Image (cartoon, rainbow, N blue to C red; front, side):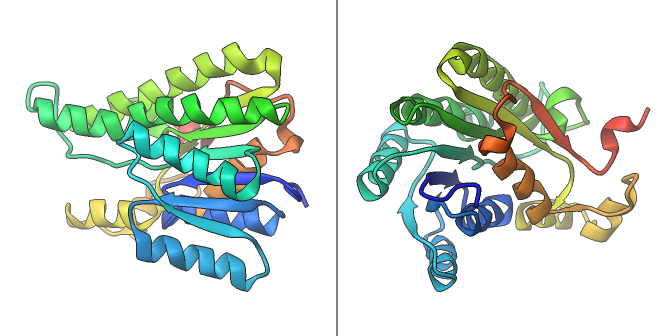
Length: 252
């Protein structure tokens, strides 16, 4: 198993890609901290891991609070003895607005959740990985982090920022065996995307038909890549933006 005897942490771990990653980390032998604001769903993920014979902990965490992130990492280390891998996955699509229609409240809310939380997470995770001789961290960006679409100003800006944070941290800590990469999901069948599309009168199936593979990604397909990037099998991979998009990036 890739993570036998190791410890992993997943933010946004109660649903979607985060939930799938928590289950895969556990399947691969890791003790897992599931961090989220949705307690009932987070506890259900922990119960699922425990039922399969794994070790897991739920920590109620609002990643827009630096104190909460610090407590999340501290609780993980206190419970499991250290930290070897982290998947900083919590985020939001925000309200789709342009540069002119975005207000300060929307900007600050989305940037704090999608981007500032990643900085804070790294700030407290990296010292713990260094104590273990290194490890892997993945930050969830987006396929929209190297392009733009209409009326997604705050989301796109924040996800571009995640890529910059990822690359900077990767370069700074590569000599000390801490690898930092970004997952770039294309359209994925998650509750967040479903809610977003329903608000615009569209379905997941319709969205999938526009991709070269003619279907959306599953949360599990995204999570498998994130877990691999955190693992020793990706031991010379750092600072990358990994597109998992069903061929979107190949379209002209």
